[in-house]
Image 1 (cartoon, rainbow, N blue to C red):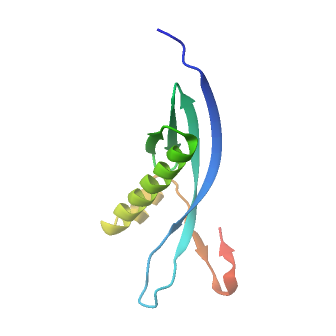
Image 2 (image 1 turned 180 degrees about the vertical axis):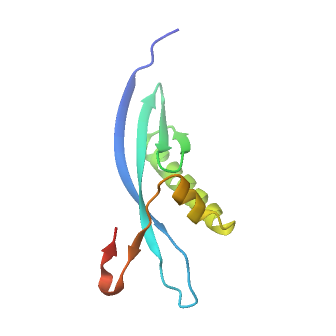
Image 3 (image 1 turned 120 degrees about the horizontal axis):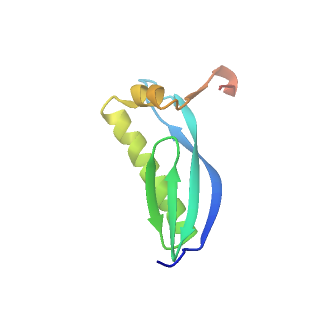
Length: 105
């Protein structure tokens, strides 16, 4: 078995969690950690907080695919009413916008 060259890269991406009230206001956002590594000719991408993973032929493709997978995961949690439970059980922190543009983090 040939040893695969591996280079690890870390990047932070921001993802907004949207929950629309009757007034259509944004509830807040979360910050997730995305890890990228090159294994052979492919790049793998993993979101630590959500456990979401994907791959791509390039780093850019892996980043784009991970962003899409994270958004799909968050939207699915919201659609089935499981976001709050999932965040609580996985210690994902929702940063809330206060009046005046301040953040409660």
